[in-house]
Length: 113
Image 1 (tube, one colour):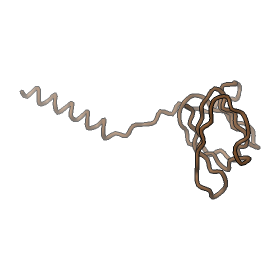
Image 2 (cartoon, helix red, strand yellow; image 1 turned 90 degrees about the vertical axis):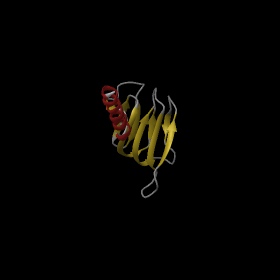
Image 3 (cartoon, helix red, strand yellow; image 1 turned 120 degrees about the vertical axis):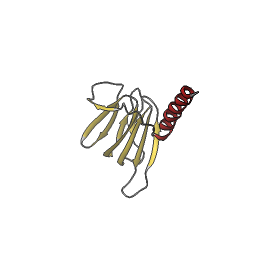
Image 4 (spheres, one colour; image 1 turned 90 degrees about the horizontal axis):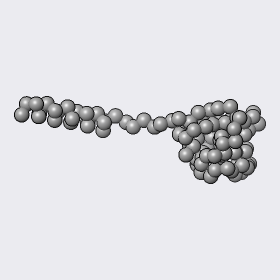
């Protein structure tokens, strides 16, 4: 009986820790050289930034006016103009073009699916 109660206490403690600890978000997304067609590419007056792999990453990228999603479904959280509330847009694979409204003031988060 003592052995049973000890095992029960260990299992209960492990379960409590699993519930108490917050789940961490896997963020495998990374910035990379722009040398592949399958990459997410964000273009602004300063050049091009490229990202690869699925995940979520907070960023601060200003003045983006063109997007190439490559082989990625992408959700961008952005501020359209200075002082405006943040919003988001999801863009399908193989999209290349201008962003709505001419440019984003600031992209704050990238999610590659």
